[in-house]
Image 1 (tube, rainbow, N blue to C red):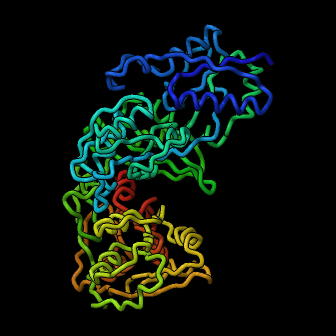
Image 2 (cartoon, rainbow, N blue to C red):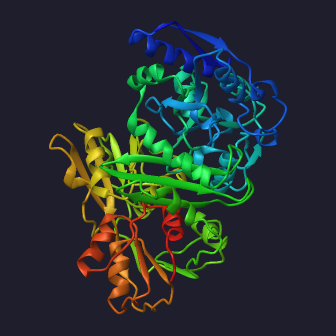
Image 3 (cartoon, rainbow, N blue to C red):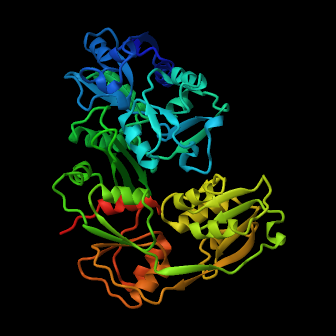
Length: 526
């Protein structure tokens, strides 16, 4: 095969991506050289991306060079590509995707770990992404979001120059460039917390449709699973008829034979986004199902019950208020401390403290524990993580998803040969402890008990959310479920109670307010 010409933009990240493909091709005996091409998006730096005219402002010039035969292939950040390709061009290969998470880089004097995302109140955050802005304001409504343009090093320099208190970047770009971020406080925003752009972290290798020989060669670089996943994301974008300016996030991953898809969509960057989670065995019709959930004519529940109090600024309350869904929020149990002072014995030679609920966090710190600065903290999910932050600590391990057994198995590997303290409810199921390895020392500390309320009124809500097994027992001791009522269970231990009762239920991916908002939004009312 002749020496091939790879077309690329000239930014540091674009050159890294092009050189990565160059090296991959060299490894299979294909000789290439790079040609740098300036695009409209590179030339116009004084406007927000959504103010630029037309589509493909980071790709059009490369595509024109391809069609004219001046280059043989173009390497793109897949998320920059329009959802429809110019006639005569195809994406021949999609290499394996890089990490699709987002990074929040914060100046160290602007950090407040007691708040979500570790940002001080009213912090100025730089991003020109409408998607990021809408989701960030949903998490922290008081933040100030300001435009930020430029390549990755330029954006980081603007933060270094203190033009912003923090900036948001795709983790993939930072990873690829190997940038040292030690001067900043770095928060990783998981794809389940801040949904990335469709195809974020993936590359697309574009060629002429007639170049069959090159297409065959490039299959050696193609990663089928990544291609399947981003195809769903990009089809959702296409069905919404949106470009990169749309406040839309969509992320698909395959896990244990199932496809898991998160979608976030807002009307504008100022509006609260709707969130949706799907777990399905097949991709058939999946994009259409996702888009169908966002139609304005859908009937959503008019009232939702949840077995705990919900504050005015709570994420779930704001998600439901947007659709004028009434909330009946009340706990069906009361909790009481059973330990008034903490014996220093429990804190000796500890490596970890693990919290399986918000209550365990709050009752533990009410005991004013004196902890070594080397102590690490584990939590079962983001709800407990937020509770821990209020006491000035950031979790070193956060369980992902609602499957407590899976969370426990992963945590068991992390704490092997170490000592772990478990502050807990007196009637805890000890789910985490069951999976720890024999070499792990467990320090057991029951610190509070739960008591069922005597008078529990039935709810007429169409959707009932239960936050613990105790709340399930409390409600159904005297109440029955109406045929049209649907149930959401937070966590597998709560779900098991409904399994015992033979009641169908929905299990959110994340046992927190975002996961609950996704679950409620996914429910159709007949």
